[in-house]
Length: 315
Image (cartoon, rainbow, N blue to C red):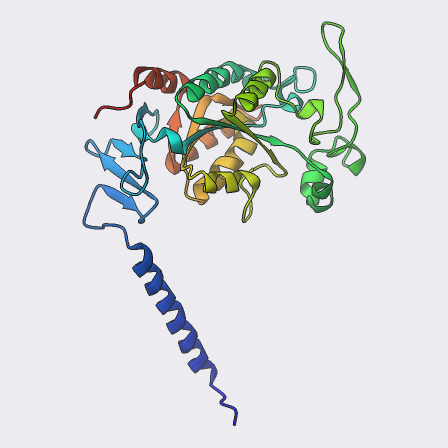
């Protein structure tokens, strides 16, 4: 004999099962301590507010080990943050020849201004034992058959596939007379996809020393979708706090920042190691929303704080 349940009974049964699953999860990991007014978040991912709610402790020290926490001054509505170096990374986005070389991107003056602050931050993060993550466009053959038309058309100079991703860009004549094969447009391994100017040797140096890691991306964000190589690394290394900068600030930097925010990371927008060729109000949008979603920082203050706290924050 078959038992046929009415739709209402099936819905009630499914709801009860979902409710029970939630209870099991709560029993397994516990809940946030709502009696502690300084804590905001959940059992594993939370901030602690200190010093009359002006200092944000991002270390998760109740759940994870700490080494030598650093107190970092911020520029926005959240004034200070305490970070754990072993779970903090500098994320450098798209500072590539294609976007920064004067002959390829003559209007990218703001992006080129961000190069020296970026180099300074790289040195400071390495010295403090914090990882440097390079996140760049790096298209491969599989990407070409899965990229949506909006991306392919947006990177085409004639609205056709024959000038979009991974098409030959030809040669470039440098000011010193050197001829450079630019390679395929933002394709993995091509010259135009390499970091620009002094950033290229900085990347090579970091990769050789093991302080830096390199991640290809195939959308504006290196964290889009369910999982990416960058996202997998952050998850497995238990990285929680990200200092982000690069070009363009209102496009790929913002895409990475907002995805990181959606996925629960602490986001710090470093204003002077970011730039854009978009109108001024695009940069203002990034600063305004980055302040609401996380923290605003300047490399000068970050580096000064790191230099003064070699032995960690004594608070």
